[in-house]
Amino acid sequence: MTDSEPKEFVLAGVVMKRLVSGEQTEGSFCLFENRSSGQTRTPIHVHADDDETVYVVEGQVTAIVDGEARTLSPGESIFLRRGIPHQLMNPHDQPARYVLIGTPSVFERFLAEAGRELRKGEVVGPPTAADIERLKAAAPRFGITLLQDWPAREKAAT
Image (cartoon, rainbow, N blue to C red):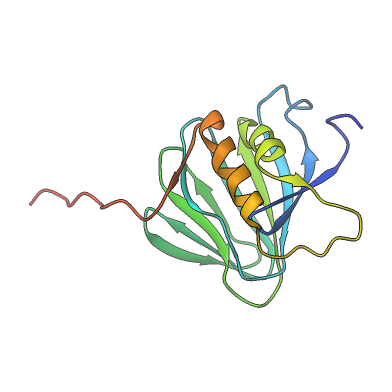
């Protein structure tokens, strides 16, 4: 299998199907179709070296950016700029499907190391302790900082 063929990974309870690889775009971006069956959430995290764009196709996805929540419905998108803490979740018991674009294609390499390939016929559930440890170990190598909580926001000068 080459990096240009579709491949499915699991990360944080979400199935991520690679549609366009960094290899195909000379590292400019990678494109994934993500599926959550519900009750999923990424850790609160910050990317140092890449941005993410999310476009919701089905269901609802909540993006929390710098501590502020925004619920996205089909046809809505959000740009997650590097350096800004964020978290993606599907807190509902309903499925959601969304497109994720990583620019440049750092996220794809992170996913290959922090996630795992989806097994044929597998029903994806919550992440296991091993899944979480793998994610924690890989994050720093790809410029991703995992946060325990939301950082205090600076107050505007009066």
